[in-house]
Image (cartoon, rainbow, N blue to C red; front, side):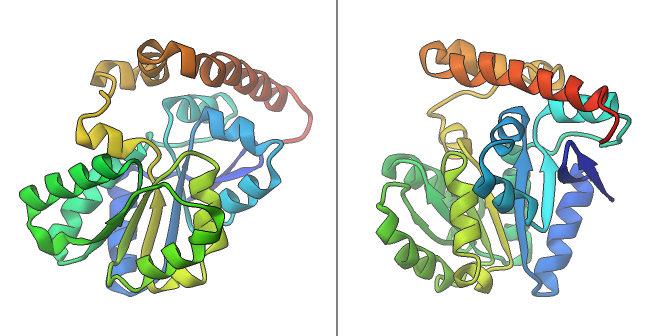
Length: 246
């Protein structure tokens, strides 16, 4: 079921339901462009029209952050659980190894994405790898990259770029990437998989404190994104909660 969350469509699905939806689409050779939203992205979408279009037109939109689940409940909506992009990617690579799908990994530094590919190759075998490329390029390179990915024979694409770069890349080159069954932006997930950065403990994730864990690791880089961004999100939430219209 899809709900309206502060003007943004969100699919109220569990992790299992999301995986099954994606698996069925790939099996049927249908196209799914996937995206997740969190508090920061919701704030950015209020002023970034291109990001709003890139996200809202996706076929499958999950709540990545626990804050989205809680905020939906506060607004009288229902989202059963967060479907974290990092966890979803792990499940889908495992699914690919079982079903014989191939994955393309695009983004991050060369040593990071290569490490991710090596880890999955060791765990699942080389047949799960359709290709990979680092995330350093110019705007003019994008069509060539999109064609490289489209012609790789992969069914799944994971894009580890920052927001809104990853959402806009997938939206702008959706026609070229139509050969793939599933595309997904995964942000900093390659850094986590490779061991370059650490993810918050499960208890912090469950209490919606994953953002604070990242802030504590890189306060100079993250303070503006989280402290100012989270404050704006709370303001938006109360604005929608107590406005006369949704």
